Length: 148
Image 1 (cartoon, rainbow, N blue to C red):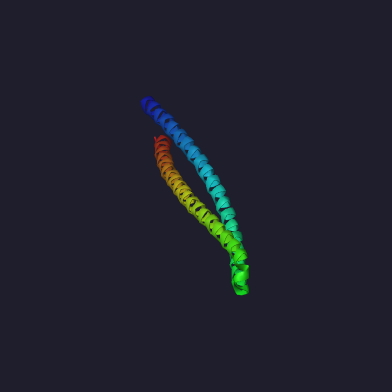
Image 2 (cartoon, rainbow, N blue to C red):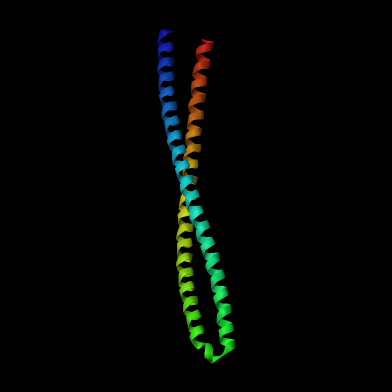
């Protein structure tokens, strides 16, 4: 009887140690998930700002294209003015290209962060399952102790 009690005590201690390890893993994984979510939030904010910049520049381009059309309508006398508008449009298009490339990079960063969060959530789910198994084993051990 004493040997069984000793064995149950050792099993309980081992189960408690395993539970503590799993809890520590869950806490660590949760912290990583929070960090990843913060990174995603920051990336989304950067993307939002880039989209606003893109919209502003598109509106600038539209305005400049309109100005260019008016300049063409006024004829050859306004060729110099038209050339300046063309240069502005080219610069704006180059800026739009740079912003679009930044948006693409930000989107890739967001996808990577979302994948990280997904992996962490998967790890948390696995660890929760292990914790449940240990709790069931501990419950079974305790029920044997109560019946003997």
